Image 1 (cartoon, rainbow, N blue to C red):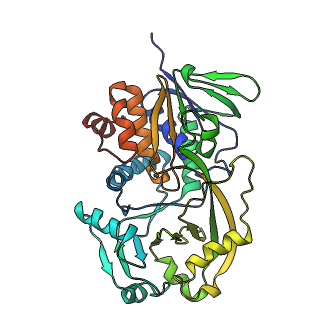
Image 2: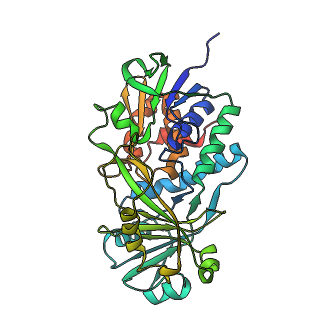
Image 3: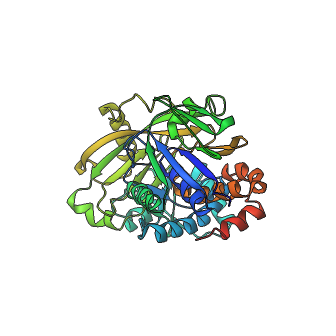
Length: 387
């Protein structure tokens, strides 16, 4: 009698857990290794929230991946026994109709996805928490919302453990892709039929030949705020705000489900070390983000700063995801920046389908990078993943 194939996953962030989830659903016996507790407070996935939205600039591949991502999340909700997504809609603003906003409008329109153009005055009238200052173009979309990231990671880890996935807290000292093996810090080794490296901002250090320098760790700063009393009702029904200017873009996440209002830097520092650097943001780092938000948030001086901190992403030069084989029995998941979380489950299902049927593997990297549509076989596999 043949035994189930084994899989070893390095990293218990959203990508590692999504890979483990997909592989377990395909019948693999899965072990997940992470150096910290799960959810890992140092991990790129462990924060109050992440966003899911169709507006993606000129990146049509990722825009078209959002609906399959929603379908994969629906399966996650069924598995973990609850929905950890809050619909908010999307408000995109910019100083002009060019750039990211203009590219998003054109790409959305080309695929027949609806949005409503707004003038600066209409933005301020419809959403009084925002000003009209400096807005040259804006649009609103009803679809889109907040994923409760830390709760999702905890729920998915709990579900996987109940399903028989083994979790081991251990630090990986090195990766041997050719042997689908990890050498741990204590000198012991773990190996399997398949190794998936999903180590977030630690991955370039572990796989310098396969990832560095195209993927680097990037220190990103976010600031947590409490709105003043006069704007709390407005924020309770506010959309996410995307102001993604190249020279100083930021995003704002509404305070949903008991979480604080969060503003974050859209730019990538491409510096820092996830292993040794502090997660505390300096006052100067916080002030830089606040300076971007002040022109957009009405009565900004009345907002109370709850804190500021840094997280670390793994960033690819063109913000394309790296999901590809680096040896016959080793796959890497990397380069997810801040926008990968929304695609974790659909990428995990796709990776698992390709692991179960290697004929699907050639189509995986280009699709994950947002460059090509899914091959027919991969699409069919995604639609027929066993429950």
